[in-house]
Length: 202
Image (cartoon, rainbow, N blue to C red; front, side, top):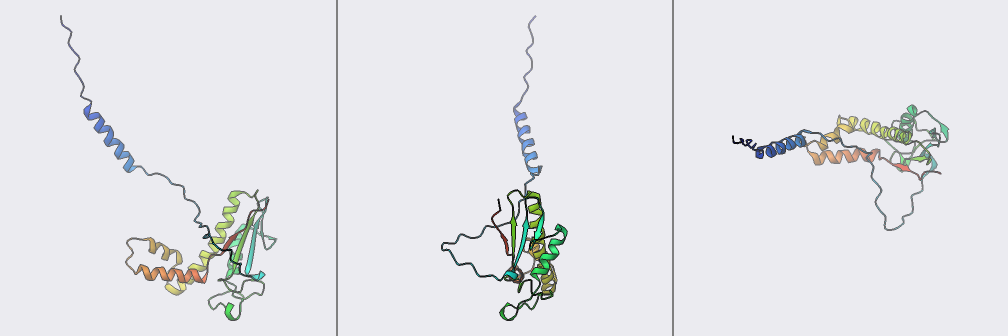
């Protein structure tokens, strides 16, 4: 009695199905991306320009020691108070003449900054400083600038600075983007983010 041959299975379409499934998963899968801190290195200077002379009152020194203790102007401070202290320094408006600030709402304290356009926040840290502490301090300092920019944008344009930036990125924004870009620059000019990060101490 002759043996019956096994029927062949047509596997040609299996490759097509596998390929379609692969494309389906590639299209529908979301890939998580790590977002870093938005920071830009200063442009490389060909010459060595002489740094401008700053009055001591226009420099706000923030330091993190190796024990992750926060010192502001050499005095201990809790992290929760840092943002308000930075706002008070930047918005002081204690200058006169060419350094006067007509939009500042501070107390014009003689020990704090003359004008936010020349005020510098100096962030110093130790090489043994915990990274999480360093980022937390930096976030509070950036938030101080954002708070002041939001206030000015709300006063001048009726919306927050953050909303203005979102509108600029929005492809469906129907307003004049060139005009919006100029308005953003005006707010940034009033409160420029001058955050100096010194070389870490050993």
